[in-house]
Image 1 (cartoon, rainbow, N blue to C red):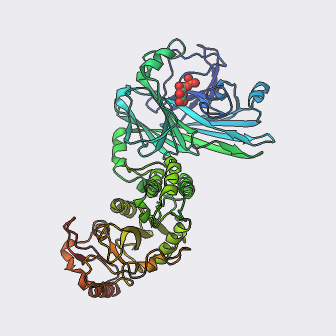
Image 2: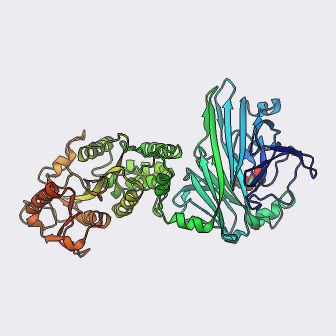
Image 3: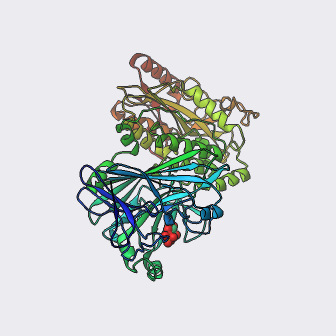
Length: 596
Ligand SMILES: O=P(O)(O)OC[C@H]1O[C@@H](O)[C@H](O)[C@@H](O)[C@@H]1O
C-alpha cells in the first residue's frame, strides 16, 4: 500500500495493488474507494467529473459507504448517514489491502447516540475488489443500523448495460411509493429514472456491459438487499448544479449491496456484525456459458459441502419467511445448497398457497416469473383469514403435512445425504428435479412431492371438489436415476374397487389423509379421490426420463394388477415407477407403467 496526497485536491488516499496489476484507490475521507482498475488497467468505477473532493462533502462516485443508515431508513435526517462524510483512520495495511476505522465524533454521537467502531477492509485482487464492513457496538445500548456500499459502476453506455440476478425478487420502487412489487424481467434495463430497493436478493448479482462485453459479478454476504439507481435525464439536470454532470447518467449505474428494506441490524452491546461485497470482472461470454447451468450446480461445483435439511411446518407466512431466511443464511455461509419447498400443494388453490410457494421460490432465487414475493405474504395472509378454505386454513395443517411427508419418506439428514421436501406448482416439478439431478452429484437424494389431488364425494355431480394432497416419494441413489420410493400414498393404500367410477378415479379412502390432524375428519369415509395423475405422469416420465416405448397401457380396472406388477418390478429390478391416467384433456394413455 502506498499512502499519497492527491495533488489535485490535497486529500490523503491509499493506493493498493494486486499481484497482476489490478489497483484500487481509497480515500481516508469516508474510506471511499474512488478507483478500481482491472489487470488490464481499465477503470471499473464511475466518478463524476464534477465530484467535489472537499470534506465533509461526500465524493460523487466510486463507492460511498452509507452508514449508520441507508437513505432515510434510520433515525438521521441526513440521507445515507454520515460515514461517507467522515475522516477514517488507517489501522492496518499490506500492499493489496487496507483496513480503515471510524469512531463517531462527539457531534455525531449527539445525532446518533450509539458508540461504535466501523471498520472497512478494502482488498484488491486480480480483477477483483473486496470490501468487508465490520461494525462493533462499543456502547451500552443496542445499536441499530442500515448500511450500503453505494457502488457507482462505470459503463460504456446506459442503453447497453443491465443488471441481472433480480428476477422474481420483491422490490420497492422509491419513485412510486412503498408498495412491494416483484421484478418480472430477467434484466433490469434503464430507459428512465430507476430508484428501486430490492429486498432479500440472491447473493450474486451482475452488472452487464454489452458495450465492452464484460460483466462485473457482485457477491454479497450479509448484505441481503440491493438498490439499483440511475438518475436519468431530469434528476441529472437537477443535480448538475452540484456535483454531477447533466449527461453523466449515460455512463454510470449504481448497484448498492445493502442492509435496507429487509430490516435493520441491531447489535447488542459488545456484539459485532460483518458484511462483505466482492466485485469480480469477467467476460460476458463466460457469463453466458455459466448461466446455461442452474445456479445450484455452480455452488456444488465450487465444492460447498452438501448438507441439507430445512423443513418445517408451514402454516403461516412467518414460517415461510423464516425458512427462506434460513435457506439464504445457510447458502450464504456455503453450508447448504438445498432447495426447500415444502409440501403444500393443496394450498395451491388458495391465494395464500400461491404466495407461499412462489414466495419460497422467489427467496431461493429461482427463475419463476410467477413468483410472488415473500413481502406479499402479509397481504396473502389476511386473505387466508378471509378464506373459508374448505380444507386448508387452520393451524395444524402444516404439522399434518409435515407428518405425512415424514411418513412417505424416511427423511435422513445425516452427512452426505441430501433430503428435500418438495412441493411446488406441479408444472415446476420437472424443472426442479432436473436441476436437483444436476447439482447433487453423487449424493443420495430424497424428494417428497405433494401432488394436487381432488376429493369428490361419490354421488356428487357438481363442483364439490376440494383440493387434497398426495405424496409421492422419489429417491435417487448414486448411479441411478430418480425413482419412486415407497411407501407413497399411491400404492399400497390405493385400489380401484368402486364400480361405476370413471376409470381415472382411484378409490383412495380420503379419510385416512386426515389422520394426524387435530380436527374431526372433514371428508366422510367412502369419499373417493381423483388424483391428478396427469401431473404424476409428467413427473415420472419427464423427469425420470423413462423410455415411453416401454410403457404399459392399461385402464383403471386393471390397477390392482398393475400395482402388483409394480411391486414385483420393484422387488426384482430396484427402482420402478407407475403413473398416469386417461385424460381426454391431455390425450394421454390411460395408465402407464414404465421401467426406470
Ligand atoms: O445524492 P445522494 O445522497 O448521494 O444519493 C444518491 C442516490 O442514492 C441512492 O441510493 C438512492 O436510492 C437515491 O434515491 C439517491 O438519489
